[in-house]
Amino acid sequence: MEISFEEFKKVEMKVGQIIDVQEIPGSKNLYKLIVDFGEEKREAISGIKGYYTKDELLNKKFVFVTNLERKKFFGEESQCMILAAEKDGKIVLIQPEKDIENGAIIR
Image 1 (tube, rainbow, N blue to C red):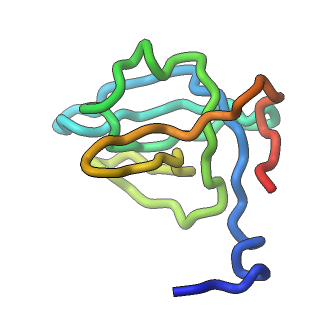
Image 2: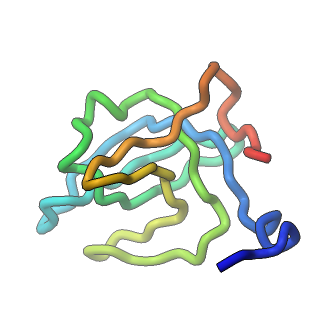
């Protein structure tokens, strides 16, 4: 399925720094990530617990979609989504190649 460039431009992606990683009671796969986007902080609920330790995430910068409809998991609201590549069951989170300010827009 192809989408138009205009449709793609509607997806808002930003660089965010994970400043806290929390366990979610009752879930064996999910982390609650507190993400700093510079002017605001948001929570992301992500099923990456089996792939990344808290230490591998904490204080690192990743790419997030920030204008998705919010969704609840185990009673926790996800306000953005971390981006990852997946192939044959391997998950790799998307990071900027060089350091850039929190909240930088992906174009």
